[in-house]
Length: 251
Image 1 (tube, rainbow, N blue to C red):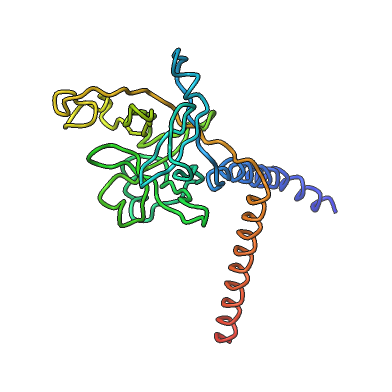
Image 2: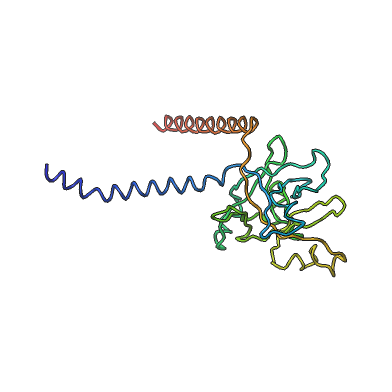
């Protein structure tokens, strides 16, 4: 009896350590669960700027004609021509190992592009540095990521840092598109849109931050989540059935 008690006492530290490890793992999983949640994206300015803060602070990121724009207070888009970013992180199969090997952290980024919930990858054009979206065949020759976010405020990063620039591409309609300043030079090199000598015109540019924003949970979103749960449940049931059949064949 005494030996049994002593054995139990000796095992306590190991049990406590295992329990703490499980709890830590559960917390880590919960902390990272946000990465797979479909969210909208909004703009923030690093510092207040009169004449810009009123229009851009909290403005929604939208998709149109394979490019990414800011739907701010004064922008004029044709009716029903834009789709709000609604996406999440997703591993980009052909590049994940390459990114990790280069010391990067992050994944690919996808968004729905229409009301039918068709998904496309979000990427940076290798030549123009514009943010665009497309299918995998469109992305392969360009920069698919890695996309990530800051630890506290969940601000978006690309290739490990925040270099997002809003560029006014249509002064008349006050349309601003999103770019990424890959070379940290104000988009001024290699004939980019900020290269006045090459393009022959000056454009208005604004440093911005991109923040993931939880979508309002309305009726449509609730239905969408139910459908996704049912699909996941049926997929799991199918896997279990196939595993059971394989087990029976093995016997």
